[in-house]
Amino acid sequence: MRLSGYFLPLLRENPSEAQIVSHRLMLRAGMIRQSSAGIYSWLPLGLRVLKKVERIVREEQDRAGAQEILMPTIQPAELWRESGRYDDYGKEMLRIRDRHDREMLYGPTNEEQVTEIVRAAVRSYRDLPKLRGREFLMKDAYSFDLDIAGARHSYNKMFVAYLRTFARMGLQAIPMRAETGPIGGDLSHEFIILADTGESGVHVHTDFFEPDWQNFDDVGWEASALQQVVGRYTGIYAATDDVHDPQAAAQYGDSIVSRRGIEVGQIFYFGDKYSRPMGALVAGPDGEAVALEMGSYGIGVSRLVGALIEANHDDAGIIWPESVAPFRVGLINLRSGDARCRSAADDLYAKLLYAGVEVLYDDRDESPGAKFATMDLIGVPDQLVIGPRGIAAGAVELKARRSGERAEVPFDTALDRLTAL
Image (tube, rainbow, N blue to C red; front, side, top):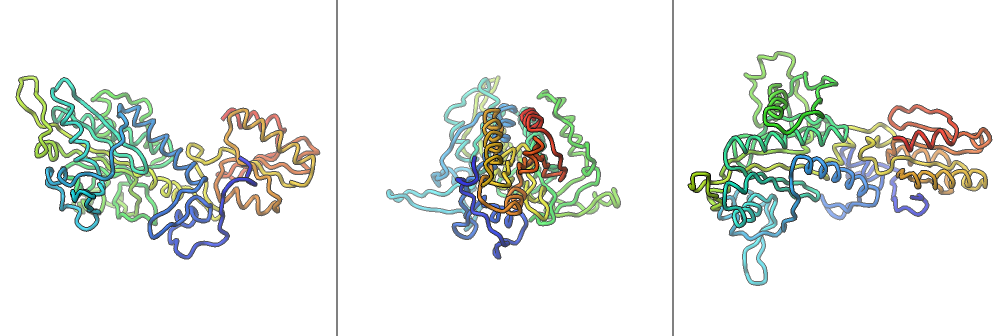
């Protein structure tokens, strides 16, 4: 993509309405545009990152056996009355009537809707287990099992899938015991990214700060292997403010620290809270009707973008992990008016594109300082810099955004290095 033709409305100054780093940088980097309070449009750069995050979430959900479906956001109110949850969200839930005066609502979550789908289609224990998912800006998944053991296995699969998902993004997401709230049940974990600007108060054991604590890539889906991983993580004290037990934490002494964090995901096991009142029953092996055992699993896909920035930035701007960066390489032509520089930059740009490298080519007639500032602000992992001095030496400058390391290398070497990544 040539920057001269790319819609990237950068801001020079910090917006007055943005109070936290991620919000400021998303606005300054031209990733989003505010429509009204709390409502934003995703612009091209931001949408590229959002799609990268969605892809990782989807791949790990597929790996865990989830099947993607798409459900309506506007739902019949009678479903929520069946489950007994219609009034649980109070004024925060948007309630409307359609043109036939039927009561509808804007569903903040989909336990009722997915239970209605499954109760109409699943009749026997032979049809179980089922793991179904939905993904847009919020990924919700729901599991349906015949018994508690099966439901706990589904819960453990999602627990590990979430650890894998966040690790692929370079995030240290700590699973913490959490309040279940209006979702219900008595087992829940929030996945929290530690950040000074986080909205949640959390209390965690310092063992979670060890650099090698995330080690589960070779874990299979067998029940014993999953339980071993889950047991390891839940055996280390970590809790949100809502469920923090000072007496239990006191036995660890100074090893428990209090921090702030950003919630990026939460998983729940709530048994038959929805299936029994809504009649989602199946015939068990003995022919007796059994209420399905259920769980739900959410990831805030769009919230992850902000959490990634909070965890990866410096004074100059964003530092994207490679897995979610909007572009892999930023190509900077220091002298757009110089015929030799332009020819060399155009040639390298074409070769990078042919090799399948996502590259943002700054071909604008701007000062070198402005070009460097733009690439640093938007956080492209590697920068290739072409200028007259390098052209004379047959070299290009390669700069790593995260480490700040710079090196002059021959053109072919730079191309080989970047296409091999």
